[in-house]
Image (tube, rainbow, N blue to C red; front, side, top):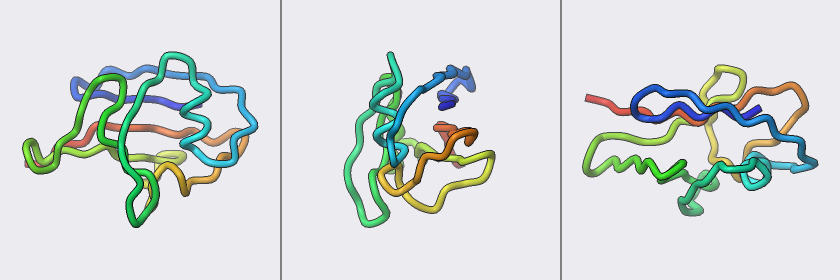
Length: 95
């Protein structure tokens, strides 16, 4: 399962049936989930999810990735997918 919590804290849930090894590939398999970003030193960094951009320079905002409620320490291309895990993409603004 992948949940997306956007800037208004609206939650969208995607049930994904996939053989993906990493979260980024499971995200690609999730119907109607759109995203963009770039490959950085810690893996794929999300910039936009479902049309909502998080711009650190402009809004002090970023997309957090949580695995079973715990903050991930790497990007989506480095997070392994396991059956039963819950993945959350959460718009996070500081300040």
